[in-house]
Length: 266
Image (cartoon, rainbow, N blue to C red):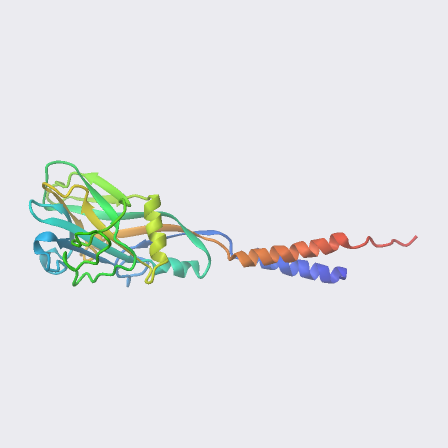
């Protein structure tokens, strides 16, 4: 191999490696009407045991997700987020999830509790689709729980918050369901599902007594009060780009090492 050819080949490979995509971090917040774009649509609705066949997405409480127990009825919330923007950002490259959090805005409107209560966020299940304009306590998609009511879930909570829902009239408070390994696994699983959609359930940890609270839903008039799911991720370069370049560069170096030393004129 001539010295000129070696130099050109080495320059070509070095240029390819220099322009190969590097590891990069990304963060996307999914919030209806806000992000990733103003056209983004999410889902959020209440289901309740005392109105088991009635959809709660309309009327005066359409902008609310009510969770907990108020005497006899049990109330739960369903949420869904299309995560396709993460795959679009990765653009075919390998990626992994670094952290996930969900921010909800709680408010007071007839809330009732005897003190602080814990509210759990659970994975509703991949591909268990629901229509927020039609879902009810009775027809919510079922997982594998035997009683088959209220859209039962399985597994441990992804995250939880504890606070006293008696916030006071006119008071709002952001509640953040923080990152966990289970939360990240749920997002990863959703991205591997048929529709890239993460579906979640909100419920009181103890569904007895009186401990119900209200969160703004995806239909809240104030866009910034709507549920916001933030996912941080890392995108890696395609393995083949770096590997091929390294092999070629290594091969050129090897040829150079194996060449006989040139004979200098005596």
